[in-house]
Length: 269
Image 1 (cartoon, rainbow, N blue to C red):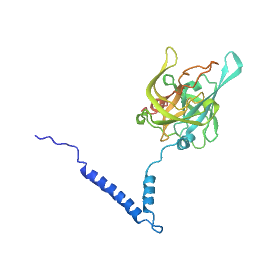
Image 2 (cartoon, rainbow, N blue to C red):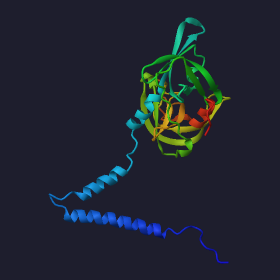
Image 3 (cartoon, one colour):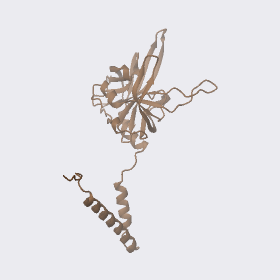
């Protein structure tokens, strides 16, 4: 029996596309040929219509505007066991994940904290408690005593939609500069980061947007303003200067949001 290609013919579609292209080209040519001072600028109108139909590229400003209402500052206090009068203060970041105001952050930000305080985008402040942790993924979920009048949960994305080289953004509080945004690209997937001789974080997203102390726990966001990860670490400095301080290595890591959401009792992706 003669075998036939089961794929529907694309010839009618191709003809229609060519005809549509020819029509647009003819309209441009006709408009330019007959355009005068008193004639409507049809070519310009068509060009404007085509430009309007093309989505504008994402910018840091548009991404920040989408995610900022869901971003929180996480401040912690820890007493010094050797000196009860001494208090160690730490700073991290977090993101609201549901209408109940639950917050995802990095576990190491709140480990052994005597007090946790959260500041929302509208300025509301509240004490918080750790409700869930996932030590293997460095994820913690916080619940506050009092949230803002309207909790704005972030839109969750999926790592499955990301490719190496895609643009990503980080919201955080690097070195105390609150609610900062930095931009970069996805550098790789499924990275493993050793924490000590016995423990490693696995399955991480690697990116090159700038992160510093205070960025941990903040959201890694795609160009559509969707949270695709929770920032957990930066690589150790690649070299040291003469005074012994490190140089920025430009390598950050985030826990994929599906894994992080699993720690909060949500569906993993």
